[in-house]
Length: 381
Image 1 (cartoon, rainbow, N blue to C red):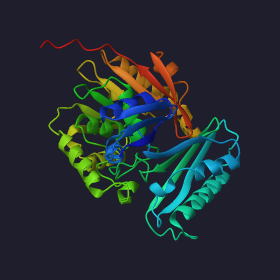
Image 2 (tube, rainbow, N blue to C red):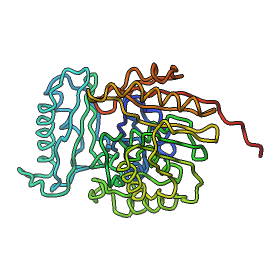
Image 3 (cartoon, helix red, strand yellow):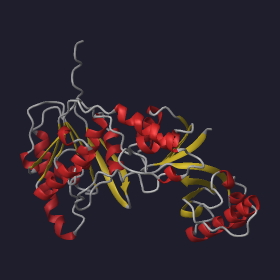
């Protein structure tokens, strides 16, 4: 059996996700703003949920059609083969609807009309007048863009950023999926130094260490579609987990460091790293960014520094970013990648970034400042 799957991601980071999908061996069918669509066999749902680092979730594509009126939406939804996917006792509903540049734009109306159409179709197929919906959950997500409706079953359940290792969160952490995608946007590799001087709950260092050790991000959690045994047998999930476990290499040599001035944050980092299985691959330390230095060349700073989201923090931003700039100037041949919503970052760092990419972290507009150092010389042999 072949399935077409949709993996939503952060806008602007589709290229990173595309590379991950290809690395897992799947066939890309479309790359669009905020999502990558691909095709795979029976095992694709399990492998994608367990293995994709930068995807927000994995949707099983039910279908796509054009709808400019609610009648179009009803008939288009009713024409989809719901009975092939959802059993008679399944619980089904449109969990989320989004609309961009389309004539249909009310999420609640879209949700209720699609639910009615699904019920109408399945009544005739299952020869019943009422659905108990007392079985497993089959949540539906729909996006409408330029009047084209794309319908998917959510196989993930909780968002894929919930890896299961964050035992001790601290204030305003960056999501695991965004951190993984941003690392993927840089040329960092496991044999290069990586330092996060504002490590918070440790997300950047932990995601980097997991990548270095080939630890699949979804190994420590469950997924909604694991209960859909009408579609995906337990052996498929077990085989995907066994394959991911076999790929882990904890013998990898790394130089990954996380600093924060808050001892509670460093304690949380260590607990999270232990839960992720990478505590021996990262060195966490209470340290101010002013004390950031390293004797080796060609390292990377990848970080999400404070950006003064509260009014009382605003006056602390200029000296903080000046300290970042001063520390960076002392690091010979290093690269620096910062995600922040602080718009005066470059001015106070004292240098314009080589590249500046605008990204949205949730609803917050942020900038990914990229200061690219030279490549290290090639090693002989």
